[in-house]
Length: 244
Image 1 (cartoon, rainbow, N blue to C red):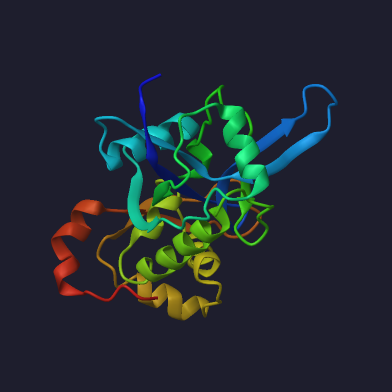
Image 2: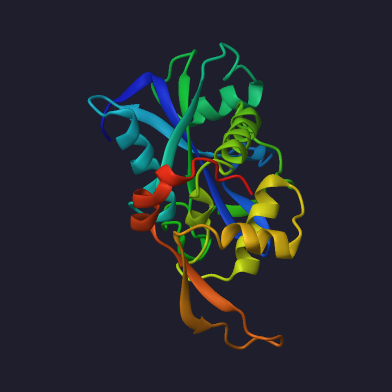
């Protein structure tokens, strides 16, 4: 393993969308006493690791993300830095760090990134079978200060999704207006009038209708759409407020 920087790490908050819920990808952290079998630690963490010597932050975050999802070239953005001197202070966290046997400083600064992925394409690698999706409002106990990091990432996501069309990163390539509305409602924790929502998004030139409809549904099949990054880049100057 390459040498790590003892006091610098990255933590990635990986958001996905499924079953009409905004989800976050977490890793189970479990440790038992080798002699007695007593469970010492049983909780969850975000995806993170230390930055290697000679590695920049964005590369470290992309590496960490790839290791847990197997994905590259996906939305990844830095949103905050966490530097409390108490980040690693709890007894369980100290036990875990001793178990890992890493040359870690007592004061580690972590730079937070959030990522938006199509969860149907997420393939945690064989080294991380403990990775699980959880609804953001049903998150289990988290280690370190990861509850604070998750809350800050959600705050940033909810602000940015009103200003830029990043929510499309959470959807399959082809989607319906209803699926798009469900996604916005999950992220923002609100409900929209269906007609008003449709009228609003249909004004967005980068939402491209397809000559394709849903299949295998009990109701009337809905038309599918795609998001065009090229059209957005060419037309975004015309409309700066992407609030729904």
